[in-house]
Image 1: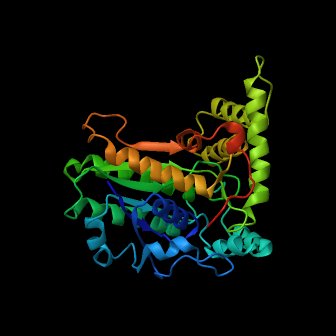
Image 2: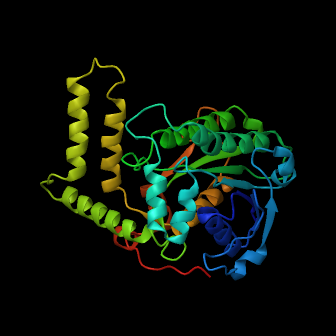
Length: 334
């Protein structure tokens, strides 16, 4: 059966990759975004696959603009989100402007402070996804199979640089998406959360490749050190141990240490979790959809109802070994 896919934010970094991958699999693909503009490379080129996507202008917060598209969609991939409150960082990363990226990052609140930088995270990372999902659950479906809703979440690796509001909004969305689907079994929608770490692409996001190279080397080193018969100490292990010691020695301090502990553990994750080429995340999204729509509807007591795929699970799904998946060399973007 040919899948009919709606990508929310389909002209963005990951969204465009999902569209391209789905088109190559013979799917019928529609993208909605605020501008409705078709995807273009940073140099203004339009790859051949772009003509095979139906590009629509629609706001995720205005269901009447896209609910008719949802009725015939066997899957939805939600790609809208923001890493920083100052969204100018996206243009800086795309253009490779390091100074502009630095300014965007340093304008953020201290990540060790709790309760800051919540408004944009809440709206873009949480509310936009819940609005699309609620509409998807309520619309009368013309699809005869199980449907899928894919939410692009994240691994918790950004703690040292990004306010906790980012990952908190992602986890809140994951939780409520799963609950909404579970409470609407008649809709037949399988919730799927993808948790990539750093996503990179040498041409579309040139600034990400050097960072990916460093993180990949760190992840490989940690894997090697941890795989010995006598495991050796690692930086990530030290950070996790430090967090455990602080938590054990000061258990009565309430939540005062929580931001510090979260940052230590997030930093440890960043050292151990390898980056992924954005093409591989897009492929994992499509493979997860194929698995979901071909599966039998889950029961109310099925503990695996909510599919969560972290970097390790996505790498396994696409069939990449550790050495292959750790490369940061070029990939085609035809």
